[in-house]
Image (cartoon, rainbow over all chains, first blue to last red):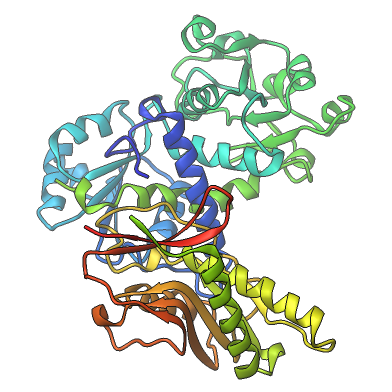
Amino acid sequence: MQLSTKHLLGIKNLTSQDISLILSTAEQFKEVLQRPVKKVPSLREVTIVNLFYENSTRTRISFELAEKRLSADTINFAASSSSAAKGETLLDTVNNILSMKVDMVVMRHSASGAPHFLAEHIPAAIINAGDGINEHPTQALLDAFSIQEKTGSLQGRKVAIIGDIMHSRVAQSNIYLLKKMGAEVVVCGPPTLIPKYIATALGVSVSYNIKETLSWCDVANVLRIQLERQNQVLFSSLREYNIAYGISRQLLDSLHKDIVIMHPGPINRGVELDSDVADSKQSIILQQVENGVAVRMAVLYLLSGRSAQA
Amino acid sequence: MKIQLNNQSLLTIIDELTDQLMAAYPDTANTVLIGIQQGGVVVSNLIHKALHQKAARDKINYKPFEHGQLDITFYRDDVRNKILAPDTMHLPFSVEGKTVILVDDVLFTGRTIKAALDALFDYGRPDRVKLCVLVDRPEHRQFPIQADHVGKVINTQRSDKLKLSLNNQGLAELLLVSE
């Protein structure tokens, strides 16, 4: 079995069979991570460059761990300490790196579409680790894996995505994936943070009421308020956001049912989630991080085939 | 395509192999049986079942070996030529200091066993590893690997394929596909 695509640019181009294959392969890699020797030799002759033009800790470390557990050689490129700061173009940087015989590129960039641009110009397999406000496919895959692990299946699952939907590549990728796998999706947040035509464009329902949303859902995926992305003021204050849309212990207890709490991280404690929710037993936030390595191993493994290299 | 071993012959061979294993490894507490995905798992399941049946019937104090499954997909030496979906790896015991009996359906070039040894040693350090196979195709071996317990030796062409599969009644049989 193979993936239908040579790159992982977004969930948009994946079929539901691709998604199922990645999730079932990730299950086997999760087993590898429990062994005394947490390594398999499968990508031993592969060199992978982590091309991060945007700051990241958890995603970059997660990819690096996944690559090392597959026995690949890894190179890290951080834009701030590199030739990009001297004005080198993206294409020049990548072609230089490829001349050193790198096989795969994991890329994060602040411009939506940057990995797609790269995919048209270079022969290596490209994995999108987040492009602007477009997609973050491996996050959606690890979120789906975590939901499946905790609740049994994605089909018919009621998932609420809460927060700054407008600027969130995590939300976009999650919506594509959940819809492809038969889940129902509600997006919830202040009207200023939800795109106007999202219901018709992406087939999701919209709610501006956190309590109604939490009463409906099985799983709440809570997004970070992205202070670094907003140029306009889209809500009055962090405190007011927390009062209207933050999830507190009190709010959860008022639901009379246990819902699953997720967050892609890093958490703004006291803004979108209170600490006693983030650290509660309903929260699978740390399992998400653990599953991230297994899911990324699955993606790297499935895209590493020699026939896929030009 | 022809039936090399029908279900009846196959079960007779399994019975003989089980007797051999029971006699050769009396220290069952420190011996484990591991089937290699996917054909080897079918064989080791049949052996494990036969062990339990013989213990129930003949030997009241006999406790059969513990049983597990090994998947070699990530350890194949041709892993990147064709990316294959992995099967379940399930070793619910430690292999440290134990006698490991690896079980496979067909011993052909020996590459599978080499990969299985690599995979096994990532779990710990067995005391010794023995190999039990249903069928041996000895003329085509590419490595210095031999089986300790062989059900049947079959002479074949290099291009032939021997496959364990389930027939219409869901019973295991060995098929020969000649090019």
